[in-house]
Image (cartoon, rainbow, N blue to C red; front, side, top):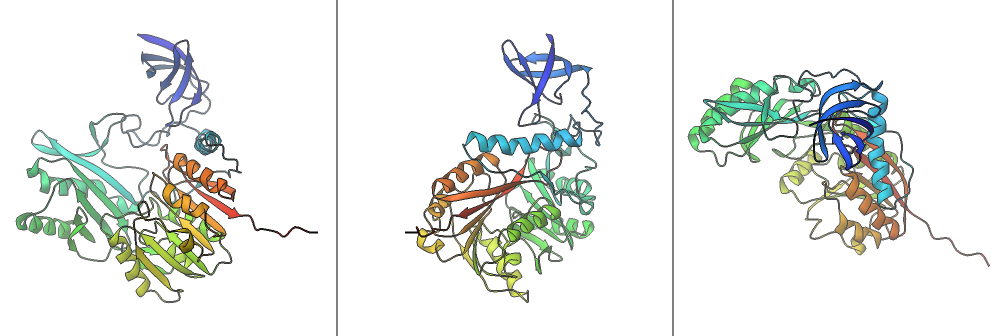
Length: 416
């Protein structure tokens, strides 16, 4: 049954929210100030007609918008979009009882996303390759994507060819493609181990596609050129299928904020260090102790360090910081601590930090909720949250990242 709804605000995922007698109704792709006719199913609504469009509505840049689930906000004006993303950070901090100045959002899209994952599965006689449809497990073919960096222009065609080579398994696949200075770096997941015949076929496909590297589940099938990424002075080949910031500009922006917060330090712990995007830049001015649970990432970091001149020493440690966080006496050896955990945050490590004497903590987060929780722990332990900078490297998505800087107040002697 159709209902006429008046949209009053945006939700965290970008849905328009209308207030109705039975409770809030979430309407995808509706904007505040709009009146829409929608089909309602419980607290969800689907637009049938936009009766009164908002001034903040703009034309989408992609013809697949609203069908493809990759973007949530191409219909928002720049002002509304930036306000919506910043508000996510402000709201999450307020809910956790954390008070801190929140800067304006920093656009870190740059040339576009340098990493993309295509899904592939058998449809009839062939392999369908694309992205998930909006709010669905259906696949939609994506011949081109306007938010990708130029280095990924060949990614859809490359993913299709590789999926065709693997179609005989009838297994759903994830094909991750990363743009590197040497060309495409591809990691395929979902297929399982590759036999000799398949390895030969994939090696031939890598030649045909001129890939830098091709791997399956992180195991290298063929490396024709090291898929290097620049990190400060260093050139690093990340682990196959390993983590990398979504955009080159995003990495530069986050690293710049980290460095700006640490102008005069001698020893820094870089926790959840990955393959070293912060470690290498920090090592231009300080000794660094890099800690990461992924052995392949640490190997990439140490190789990059060995090949780079002009850096202060970087010590690397393989350690699961969720199960074995650095303890207070270990943390006390460092002037500052940088941490960039996954979405779950770093509660176990943060509790140890709260009891340490380290003067500064720079927390890079990809989840505002877990950051707010961990921030409250640090503040309770005597740190002050100096400020938070939201960073947008996932343009048109609901995803937001941030950098928070915590300082421990210096004890002052009481005057008599």
